Amino acid sequence: MKPRLVILSRGPELYSTKRLLEETEKAGWDVKIIDPLSLTIVIDKDGGKIFHRGWPVECEAVLPRIGYSITRRGVAIVRQFESRGVIILNSSNGIMSSRDKLVACQMMSDNSVPVPITAHVGSWKDTVRAVSRVGGTPCVIKSTEGTHGYGVFLAKTDQQARQLVYQMLERNMRPLVQEYIKESHGQDIRVLVVGGKVIASMKRKANGIEFRSNFHLGGSVEDVLISEEQKIIACLAAKTLGLDIAGVDMLISERGALILEVNSSPGLEGIESSTGINIAEKVAEYLTFRYHDSLEVEIEDESEEITDSNSHKITSDS
Image (cartoon, rainbow, N blue to C red; front, side, top):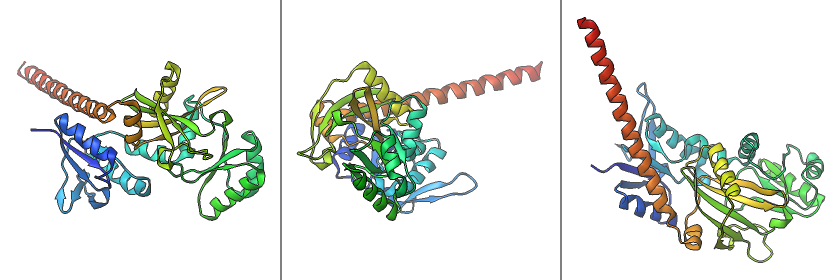
């Protein structure tokens, strides 16, 4: 019987979802793509169950592809699967930590992962002081929550910075004021980490005068080799946030590599096309490794139980 895998995704037609489906099926998994919003959680004295359109969901592994807009709902579903002992590639805590840029920045800094100087302000009146602490203007103003480069702005003056912070606070957003790395203007490096190993890396370049280098904003991508030190930093960032699969965004500054943020559901299209590396296959291989490892642990536990039982029986007979 094939092991069962659930891919949690609202976009079965998306490139990354289709590639993961294709490669995990090749690796011998029985795969279903399920929309997280179509699942129902029932919590009871036995820990609870998960239902899809009235039927209980049973599986050996879950691969979350949780979109930003449904983070809390998606994380609740992942947490319920975790409570059932299912293999999860990216834990609920890892997803939540990576989605909050302030929390992620704090965690990485606490674990010696280099990050740009960052300030969190609660009042627009503190903006100018925060700007001076991160090195002055130009500086980056961003929301603590957001993806694909949305909610990220380059403020060229103190007045611009104040206006952006004020507008974010008015919209109940939590603004960050961050150091601008001029030597990395319009470009960064995306490092793909799977199972604690760097699988691929690409350089992303912004389109025209745009300073954000995101592929979804029309940026270009190309294969790039990174140093061993940069690989270690990328893996440490993923490990710090508790992510099995991570897209680590790195800026190269005069003082070395700085981690901008870590994506818990990294897109595969840009990095597979630019590097020629089959990322989805690497994910499938790691998932299969985790599954076989869990089977070995179960066998060892059963052997220990039998040994303990026999020892107890011998003692009783004596």
